[in-house]
Every structure is written in structure tokens, then in C-alpha cells.
Length: 290
Image (cartoon, rainbow, N blue to C red):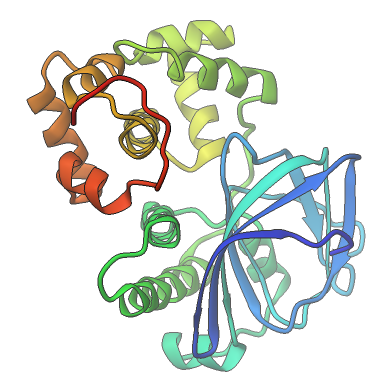
């Protein structure tokens, strides 16, 4: 890469590096890179940008759509293009030998396998990468052991996807302006919107919106709404003194108990304990109580 990334968080393991990284590309991006490790990556909305890539040594004109989750194989030159801007990625960088030992095979990286690498699809990979992101941002007890277990499971899931999935043609995804509309609506206080409302903001029908949204994010709309709400909850718990009742109201929950149950379901933490364990020194007060 011609611009060095900013490493926001990192866990280093034998033969594996796990990172939350960010780039800022002030102009449209056109880069060529060859890595010495397999790079399993997930771009994070709203920082993800429309991108396409090819493998010049295999087919220099065979550009394909880059999905939300992708794998850049070690030793394979990749050329990627996108509109640039702010890009944030969860990355699992793993030595080829460790990858092969974990999944039980070496790949030949045929054109069909490489095409699949650009757009890995599967809820298990999405979930594992989000869990890795959470562990990077807020490491807990036995963090390295848990992160290594997630990484091993991720290797297996990517290998299964490459081995068994057919090449899936991309059928389009939400445009950047449409995703911004969704993100702005989800950032508003109060009850979460439904699919009909979000589809209307994007100027399309509900079923079409569901498909395009999933193609962009790799998540269902329901799962994304819940994750965004819990991300906002984490931020308010860590950065403010707002009581749980007020946080619940701002997130659209009728009762603090409902909010606590939803937060535990997603994070496995009680909100009060999460606040105590993750409170930043000198966090700005905004309200009172816990």
C-alpha cells in the first residue's frame, strides 16, 4: 500500500496478527500490493467504499466486485480501485503455513477461487470478525486465547466458503448516498426505524432495499440496527455519566430493563459492569448517576 495505515488496535499472536486499521485516501484509490501473509479483512460501514479488484498475474483486466469480507492470498498480486476517503478494516493476517495447518489444505488459487476471495459471503465470518473487532476494542480476560480461537474459526469458515461456494455474481448494493441516509436515521434518538421507513428514505421498495443493504454490509437490516444501537450504547456508557434510564430512552427502549436485556444479549455484559470496566479516565460528564 502506498499510504501507511493507522493501527487503532492490535493483538499479536504466533503466526497471526489481528488489527483494527484505518486509512485516509484523499483521492481515488488505485493500488497494487502483494502480501506475504493471507489477509482476511472486513470493511466497516460507513467507512467502506465501493471497490473492485483484480489479480494482474491471472487476469489483469478481470476486475471483480469487492464485497464486505474478502481474502487477499499471500503471494498473489492484487490491484484494487475505489473512490477513496476514509476506510476502516478489521484484519486477520495469518502465515500461509498456519492457515494450511488449520484448514488442512493448501489452495492452488484458481481463477474461480480468487473470484470467490473478493466477495466472501457467510454470517459466521461476519459474526467472527465483529467479535474480533469487539475484542480488539475492549479486550477482556484471556483475550489472546479467545482472539486466537476466533481467528482459527475464521480461517476454517473462509476455507469452506472458497471450497464449496459457487462464484456469486454481484447484484448491486446500496449507493453511498443511500447508506448515509440510513446511517443518519439510525443516529437519531428514539425508537429505531423499520424496514419500510428506511426503504422509503432510499427511494426503493422494501424487498429491494433488504437485498441491496445485505450486499453492502453483509448483515441483515435487523442485525445492523441492533448492532448500531449497541455501539451507541457502549459509547454513552463509556463517555458519559447518563443514567441507564436516560440511555435506554435515547435508544428507543421503553424501560431500562429492556435495554439491559438487549445489551447483555449482544455483548454478554451487564451495562453497569461494562461501564465500570471500560470507563475512560476523565470522561466528560453528561448527566448524572449510573
